[in-house]
Image (tube, rainbow, N blue to C red; front, top):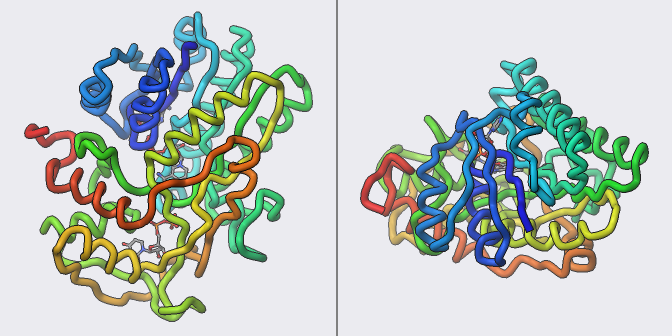
Amino acid sequence: MDIFLTGGAGYIGSHTCVELLNAGYNVTVYDNLSNSSQESLKRVEKITSKKIRFIRGDIKDEQKLISSLSGMDAVIHFAGLKAVGESVLKPLEYYDNNTAGTITLLKAMQKKEVKKIVFSSSATVYGEPLFLPLTEEHPLRVTNPYGQTKLMIEEILRDLYKSDDSWAISILRYFNPVGAHKSGIIGEDPQGVPNNLMPFISQVAVGKRDELNVFGDDYDTPDGTGVRDYIHVVDLAKAHVKALQILDKPKCEAINIGTGNGYSVLEMVKAFERASGKKIAYKIMPRRDGDIATCYAKAQKAKEMLGWTAQKGIEEMCEDTWRWQINNPDGYKSTNA
Ligand code: NAD
Ligand code: UDP
């Protein structure tokens, strides 16, 4: 089968390429490289000893999509801008790239009769939890433009399926993806100062940053710091392979992809210290705007529908992040991999 990955050169896309190639799929990556480099794909080829077809293109370019989609069986749609803070400052860019871009992609797919798609949504669509763990039935309400784009795309996909029930659509709501491939040669490569906890911790451990700012220690959680459901990126990548396999029949399903376990910021700091043998200096700062206290998944639907459960715990998440970080202190610009 031929799988078309928009945004496939990015963090989650590149790890998914590995799992798809290992499972025997042919992989075409369509990416404008706005937040990635082709080096990630070269390294995926090194890990798997298989070839990737790469097309540099934008999801807003309908003509290019139409010609590129020839012969494809299904799409995994990762392409999108993902920084919450930036989305508040540049909402038009986010709505244009993520929402309008997805509409363009779906139109091109419709024209080419490619009607199978796995979409990267996020636990952010649940907003402040009304109850925990978060089930797929939890009300959807978002608090920032990035989250809005995810919710709008989900609604567009549901409407599309209502209009034409020959579509097969898996909406995967990721919790907090972290970690890297075991080889230590692909991983997360944030540009500039990382927004997310795990890459920030690992840059402190490797000496690129002096200390971690812990955003708030007065939440209603066991140690006062925020609690999240961290999911190893390789487990997440495997969930995509499973999600593709259920697209043999028409459907439109939203599925949580998390472990079901929550860990606090300070628990993650301690786990990373154990994995790296380095002390992580940190200071307590005020809460970050828009953050919630606690968020973790009910992962039952993924188990029932996909036959998938997360296998890797926080020790492995930290060890694999650390291996990637020390081997590649400058991400894909590092030459020693
Ligand atoms: P990433 O930035 O590493 O990958 C996204 C890729 O999309 C990049 O390679 C980028 O160059 C490409 N891209 C962006 N706009 C494009 C466009 N208009 N046309 C073509 N390519 C374009 O991000 P990631 O962490 O791998 O995330 C993948 C998807 O998962 C995104 O949609 C993101 O919103 C979603 N997601 C990520 C997280 C997370 O914490 N990483 C959590 C939940 C959901
Ligand atoms: N966090 C932190 N310092 C940082 C980045 C994040 O204390 O530099 C905290 C954040 O407040 C939240 C958790 O770490 O409680 C996870 O944040 P992240 O940005 O990684 O993911 P989010 O759940 O916000 O999408």
